[in-house]
Structures are given as structure tokens and as C-alpha cells.
Amino acid sequence: MAEKPKNVIVPKNVTDSLRQIFYPGSKQDIVSLDMVQEIRIVDNKISFTLVFQRSDDPNQVKVVKECEEKLVSELGDIDIKGNISVKSMHQMERPVLPGVKNIIAVASGKGGVGKSTIALNLAIALSKTGAKVGLIDADIYGPSIPMMVGAKDVHPYSEKVDGREMLVPIERYGLKILSIGFFIKEEDALVWRGPMASNALKQLITESHWGELDYLLIDLPPGTSDIHLTLVQTVPVTAAIVVTTPQAVALSDVIRGTNMFKNKSVDVPVLGMVENMAWFTPKELPDNKYYIFGKDGGKKLAEKMNLPLLGQIPIVQSICESGDNGVPVAVDENSIIGKEFMALAKATIKGIQQRNESRKPTHKVDIKHKK
Image 1 (tube, rainbow, N blue to C red):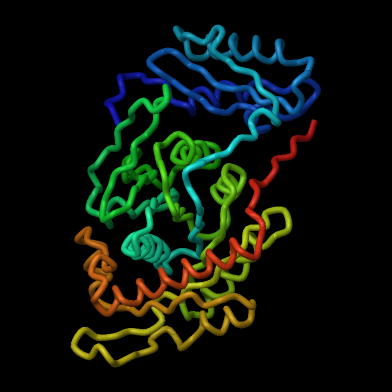
Image 2 (cartoon, rainbow, N blue to C red):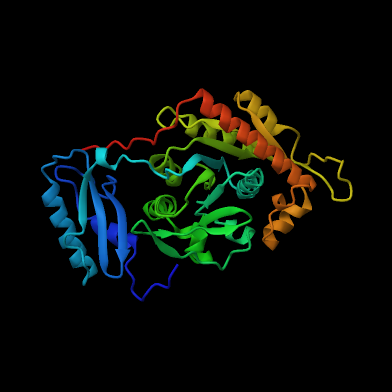
């Protein structure tokens, strides 16, 4: 991205100011009600959309005026007059990422199971089948994808696409990639909280030039959080893949994480599970398997939950080395671990095909506003 001027106004400044405005007759502010959308800032010009439940809402003029006055008083010399658009929820329902055929969430019940490693190498393996693939690193608690692809110091830029300023994903190993880690200092990653992180994820999804993709993988934070809810409210997620390890302590968390997607209000199909660190294979003894974290824990849980086991990925020294060197293991599809990820990619493609043939497309989760 282009260098920001000093004292630059960012979307968080706008939302922080607008949190002081409450919808008439409600105890909730307009940001919490998700009425403030499509924030755009160019120099001192601020524009955004106010989304009302009804197109004939009698409070539209009043709320717009309050927003203009509050932003001027809070942010100083800004261009805001006439830049606030008003739409109804019905008008906002338009295709998101129309060029993306399948959106796959990669999740885990807890941290430390190698979820980002699985997401990245699965994405690369999918691209090796000839598919067009994108990857969003939405793990705000530890965005690791930039380092894993050797792009730790890369800063994506923006360009005008159809009159809109859009972020341009970087390209590595046949993938289009964006990460929250590209836009924050490494030491700041852990201090991100709800609305700030959610707005960042929305920007990575909806204000980036992804173009035509067969698969867009979203590497989610561990557990369940605002990021997960923001994702399913922003785009129709085709399916989720859950990553676990054989250990019992990881398996109990997987159940909770899986049930979040299966919840009736979310209703995102779980494509299956991936058991990472399934066994240890020494480089010198490629045919040997040592089950240092227990045997088939993920496989048994998948059977218990009536879910497919998409793959079992072993521990090999090259995985650790690849994360440090910025060359993912799936780049070499003929290596032991590369073959495992190619098998995982083929299982994923088959699962997506079966899902799309047997189920209707997923819908975004509706946000219900309470007055």
C-alpha cells in the first residue's frame, strides 16, 4: 500500500466517533447495529453507507446529520458533507465476490494444531491441480502466512478497479494472498479487538481485487470469535474444514468449533476434518511411523461426528524448515509430505463437488437488528 501521511484518518477513527450516535429509540449505537458500512477514506474525504432496515425509515435525515456533525467535531477538517449514502438492507443484498466460486473456511478448535500450515499448503496443492486459488490470513492473534511465503516485509498496494480503490493481493506460489499481517506491526498483532479486526477482515474480502477464483481459503483464528461471525455475515461460505491433532485435549475443542458451523443459525457445511501431526516420520526412515501424539485421534472423532476424514498429515522436519525459509512443503508435490497435501487437495475438490451437487448454496447469516 502507499505510504500513509502523518495523522492519517483510518476507518477505526470513523467508527469510534460514530459509536456515540444511537439509533433513535434504541439503546444501541449505529456501529453496533452494523448500520455503518463501506467506509472509504481518501486524504481528508470520508464517505460511507448508512444501512437502514427500511427504505422509508423516517430517521434517515436525522441520523445522517448527526453523523456529519459528530465526525466534524471529532476529526476536524474533513470532507464529509454529502458523502454519506443511505440504503436499505434490501438494497445492500448484492453478490459478494461474484468471481469466486467456492469460499472455504479453515478452522481449528484451539491454537497450536498447525492450522495455518494446513491452509497454506492445501491452497498450494489446489493450485497445482490447475485451479485458481486465493488465501486470506484472518488469524489476528498470530498472522503467520506472510513469513511462511517469504513475504514478511511485503506491503500490498491499491489500484482503481471499476472506479473503486481496491487492494491488490500479492502473488506467491500460484496463489493470491492477503494477510492482516501485511498491515500491522508484528508486535501489535495480539492487541486487535472485535470491531477493529472485523472491519479489517471485511476490507480484505470485499475491498480487494480477487478476480476469478475457483477457491478462496480463509485461515481463521483458533476457537470461535467475532472474526468467525463476521466471515459468515459477510460472505456465503461454501464449506468449512476443521484441523485437529490426535491429542484428546485438542479433540474436545474441535467438537465446539465444528458445532459452531453446524449451528442452525450459521448452517455452513463442514466438509470434513484434517488430522495434523498424525505421526512422525524421520527423513532417514520414510516408511516408519511413530505416533507420538496418539494414534488416529482425529480419525476416530471424525467417525464419531459422522464427518469425512479428508487427510492425515505427518510431522516431518521439512515442515518446520519450510515455515522458517518461506518455501512451503507443498511446492514439491513429489516429496513425501507434498504427496499427502496433493491427496488432501483431491479429497477437498471431491468434497466440494459433492457438497455443491447435494446442497443449495450457503447464504450469508442474516443480522437481526433490535430496536
